[in-house]
Image 1: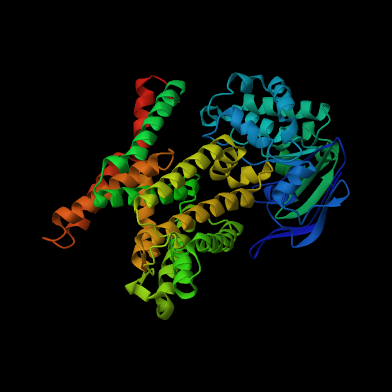
Image 2: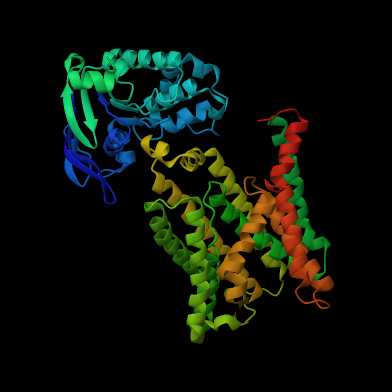
Length: 234
Length: 325
């Protein structure tokens, strides 16, 4: 479904990603783990079109998307939940969700989509007229995910959804990611919380200093002695 | 909110009736002139606030005023090209200029202070350009529109015609503001202001929406500049281009409240009236004093009413009605 092939990404002269290749099949939940500053967020930003690769290609459902603008990529079916959620604090929950359905494909069906979203996130239905800034951290993350789902994505990318959340809420977020998989979404998840993320993933990548250093099924990660000590704390 | 809207609606009807009647009640041509200026500047300040209320504070709208004012005036003086069409040429050039400048700013993600600084430089360039071409533009001494008194040249024997032109423009600007409020553009621009990355990753075309509002704002500003020039029949880089006038447009909108539709109108009324009053009552005895008093009163008002007069008022009313947000 998604084919990231051999990309190099730079911030000016600083190279953030070096010949990174990632493959995702339809219906899979794929995670990318790695330390701070390894390039995980850059990878997601590049797929979302917020950053352009200097080399390599990105294909989604057979179409090249690496030269497309961010909003075209969303129309094409890829949604990014940015790090920290980035809800619009001065807009109401309802308006936040509306902005999520601004692309051409999603706008006509936004009305039918809302009840489905509210069913998934009952908390948001209760707070629909509140400003997003008044929500708790967990609720904001939920809103950020809900907002991205409004865009009708086939691939949803989550950038550190558990960041800064209370342990109980982190569990909720991961439960939700599991349920998204059951709903048929393809998920690309970036996490520092490798333990929890590996439990929900079908396939995983390890990225260090901009390079993919390991990939495999969750079980392979559990078996690898280096990853065990460095990332899983076992 | 319902109650405020109702009061606001009746208030606006009354205001409109008063504004329409005013030139027939007040016969002093001097006061009529001041009132026309107030409406023209209200129109320009409203157009400026189109952008500013979404976080795009431009300190360079003088360039659009200048383009709108100079092109039709010069085309008329040199080629006898009628301003009825000339002003639209000016507007078109201003919109094209805004497209180039805006695209450059938005493509490279200039936000907030950086955007303001770039636009400030643009305003200065506009004044310098006029001075550089002093043979054709009159330079810093300014430039006078040839008087013919013919309606086909947009010159009217009754000066009140311009009052009503300005009033219609202002009503138009208020109407467009309301339309924007009801359209998806408002949500998109608010989202963009709060987080460009989040908005872009949700499929909101950041540059397109920003360009849309910028071109609209620039075009209307140029229209205001064009009518100012036709009305006053004199243009100079100090009065209609450059940094000074750019800032004074901002002050008007900020003082009145740039997030409320009538804020720019209220601000322009106060500032134009204050400027005139101070200039006439003490301008002759102490040169510059009027500017000082004007500056200080502006400072006080901005410090104590950070949301502007209209913004603070509507907040106070909603508190009173016990409907905070």
